[in-house]
Length: 210
Image 1 (cartoon, rainbow, N blue to C red):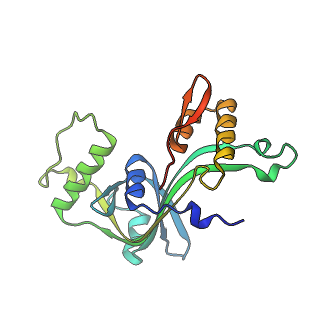
Image 2: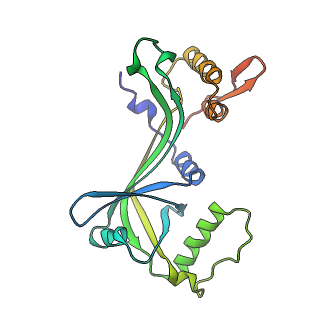
Image 3: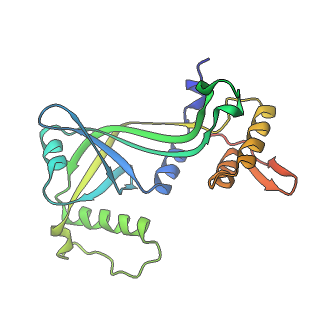
């Protein structure tokens, strides 16, 4: 049974919210031998573009100068669902609840000092929200000390699997199984699924629509 349409994130706002909440993305570029090179990066999604900071020299910079077409992916595994949740005799039914966003677009190396400072401040705001640093100005030396990569998305799509393809009854059963298994991520997974944990077990309080 195909669930592609049901699993697609339809809300751009939800995709942006997800990107803002995650700390690691992966940029895929093409190296000089024609192979994809995938590198994990810190990033910030600002005004419709993805910004990343980098050393001023390196293979990924050479790659995007040679071929600006890149892919960018961010994902979060919410919960692994062991096979015995469905069938204790069939290992193939093991599954995973997840959220992911994939971007295809053009990558450039930012040269404008004002835009570089803006991107660096955006990264600091995301990763160090408590502050305790001097805001970066275009005339600071740090602006020259790093390279800023900018991905302008041409395509952005997302998928999420949190039980929305299941009946309400099966989702309730799954929430109880997840809570009973007691993984470190169980409480957050149930929250994303629209449940709250009560003394009587998980109770659905929301019907998440992405």
